[in-house]
Length: 153
Image 1 (cartoon, rainbow, N blue to C red):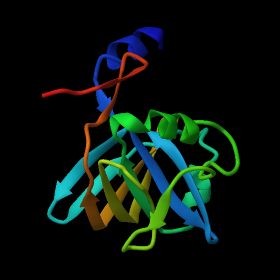
Image 2: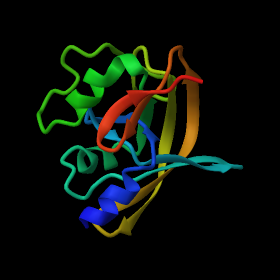
Image 3: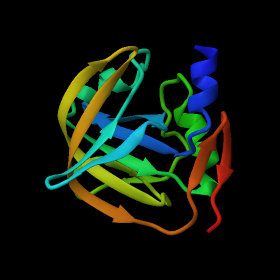
């Protein structure tokens, strides 16, 4: 497993925070395993860990938002990566057009209807049908070899 993590850790990823409402309360978690899945219809995929305490609370919402973070939002990633109750405390956000929590200042956001959840070993493979999306400004927050970084073209 150490070798697997070392090899796959060399694949740079963007950093996202996935958010939803559970009975009116915003919940979320940090997720690096996110990708575009289909253009027609527009769909995305994400891969939360089965040990996540946030993802199970989000499933019943039926909708979620993938917030793509900027290089200035490393602290947001770290906050949502923790196991604690009110991760939104001190985080600026608003309700998006599709009714999901959108983190202010993010590079882009994708609001989705939950399409399917598949077993994937110690994770779940989640697909979402895109409902709304938008873009912000800035440079992306990158995760590479267990460290945060930035991208400069």
